Amino acid sequence: MNALKKQDKKRDGPQEDPYALKHYLNAINHKKEDLMAGDDAFWEKKYPTYIVNKALSSFPECLLYANEMNKMHHLDKKLQFQFFLNSIRPKKRFSKWLRSSKIKNLEYVKEYYGYSNEKAKQALEILNDDQLEEIKTIISRGGKHGKT
Image (cartoon, rainbow, N blue to C red; front, side):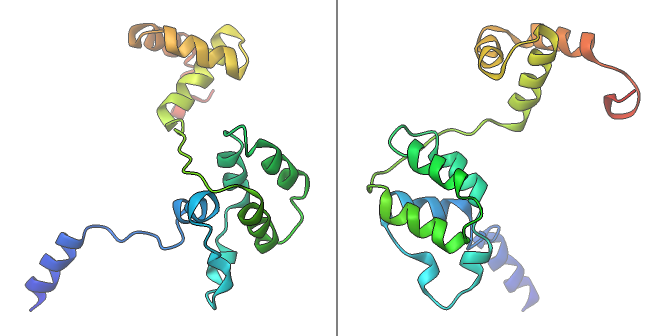
């Protein structure tokens, strides 16, 4: 019996977080579904205000709404969610997130050249892997975890 249960778990794959960011963004952007209206208090508790604001601010039509919620960060999570839910027009919106390796490379380029975030992003598009490795070795401070 245990072997059957293990096989079922393998087929199902890893369990998905029911309160994942994508559920909040889908509810705000195109489903217009009030996730916090039910009895489950965890929808409000797990609402990631900063990350939702950051995700929505990458779209021109949502930028001003995200800025308003950044100004009103002291409001309850439910109020912030309701504001987005009722203010933003329904539309499927998708944006790419920077991967952690690209963020590290961005920091190396910023430190090496003294660039701002935007200039460093432009430089990353031009630099190849060999050039990035050379920059990393020059900036490397040695010691454990690169710390002096």
